[in-house]
Length: 375
Ligand code: MUC
Ligand code: MG
Image 1 (spheres, rainbow, N blue to C red):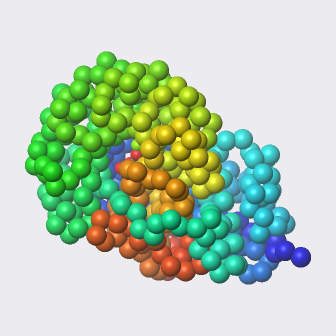
Image 2: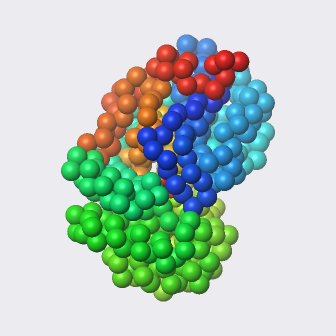
């Protein structure tokens, strides 16, 4: 008989960030991870992570809500299920809970990690095999201060850690944002690529003015300038400008991907395992992009090491990933809860060796950072 799932634990973990991280909708001083430990009757444990940004200000699920969903609805549905049959377990979850993609992503990751350990193969092998073992990773400059951002970029270029920088804009006026981005681009010149993420903050009129100026300043990519529901605006901007327009919040799973592709709303899709409900959902969205000739980018919800490495296994298995990734979440937090932190060098993240995700929990660190430690 195949091993059965015996327990599913969801743990809130608060990790301080190395500096304040300012986005259009939130300023992060810490990141909250929801870590899943899924155990089976053969003694194998799988790890998963569901992480979002800024409580409920970015996504539809909060860390506390994700834990509640897992504890109350998803875990009871999984106990006694075949731990080796990931498709049936996920189908069962889709029957007991609509939506809740972040929570489901964490469970799917834990099932894949456990199955990889069981078969002694990496998660990327379970996905059909890694076509690349390293992934380019950009860094987000979001200190809120132009000069500090330039110094940060110079340091990271010198360390050969990142040579593409994403600037978070949309908090200030369009004029101030354009001035901020232009100063950084002219300081870095051809030594680095610069992209911007507006996180839905602009109206179509703001976006038309802002993108024209950013294109002239030499920006390489414009991410989610307008609200996610306004697909017509995104399509008009994509048709109007030469600089590529990337959909992020507008594209969650394959259903959105299909509609955005059909209506020519974007040149590039930012894929994320959390918003797609897991690695398989992300790969289904990627298949639609491939069929439509849309370029791909490996996005993040600023997950810690478990979620970022799970994403990396998925992104390494994609046929194309023209715009690289932003899997820098583990570098934004001061400390970690895994024994060996992910390796970043020569502008790339290196996929860990070893079965499953290739990661192990540091029990002391987890005990220290878990929110319920004094409960
Ligand atoms: C987003 O919208 O892309 C990714 C990098 C970062 O700084 O924030 C995230 C979210
Ligand atoms: Mg984004």
